[in-house]
Image (cartoon, rainbow, N blue to C red; front, side, top):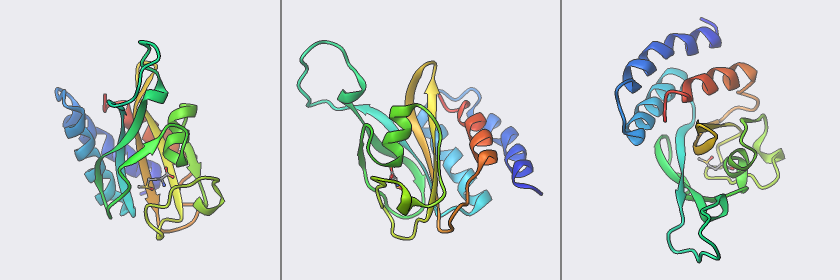
Length: 162
Ligand code: SME
């Protein structure tokens, strides 16, 4: 089976796990488990966009700078809990509202190394309408694991999360 076929074969399962379920964290948990076991990635999980409750408000607008990424459901080794807007691969994907495919994490300025084993990475924003509500982050122990097929298929898959 090609990588594309493997992703496509997961889609009905993801649909049945997500359809009718309103709890986003539960959906993230099952999707992370499914991707992780199917592909054997090093780390597979979600970071959610969460308001920083103790920040000072200069006005009533709740913008991205008043939120951060917080570790959500994942499979793999322990990971950092808080990631600021625009920081690391995850915070950059959130800020730029687009998928980032990183063939070599050491070449990505500001990459946050939760694990020294991680060599390449893909981060896919989870959109609810025009809002980024979370990111899907997948790490590999090999260089250049992810390509345009992963980007396209994962972007399709995360549409079922919100
Ligand atoms: N490498 C990520 C941090 C999260 S861990 O990889 C699980 C980043 O640079 O944002």
